[in-house]
Length: 97
Image (cartoon, rainbow, N blue to C red; front, side):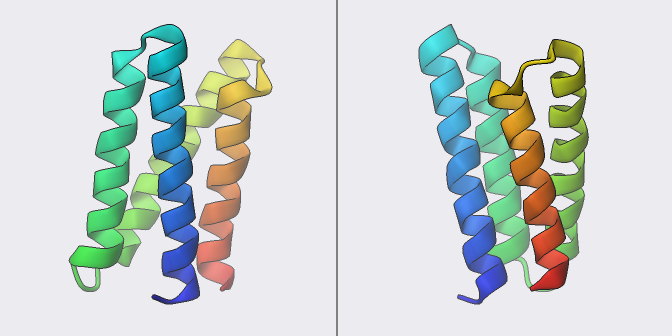
């Protein structure tokens, strides 16, 4: 696995952990389901479907917009602000590495 794959794998784990925490702390099934769907899509686009890495970038861009809007609306760093920063860093590093 290359460094971009490792980076995305770490992001997927953080995304799933966040969805699980949201479910366990607040009972948010939507958080759990959304994180599972996003993680599956990212994994498919990066690791299963050859040449579809750009689609993973689109999913990351959508997540960046989603988390950014949640952060601006709620003005709380956890969890939306943290995931905004982590998603932005992941997206940037995918193009730099």
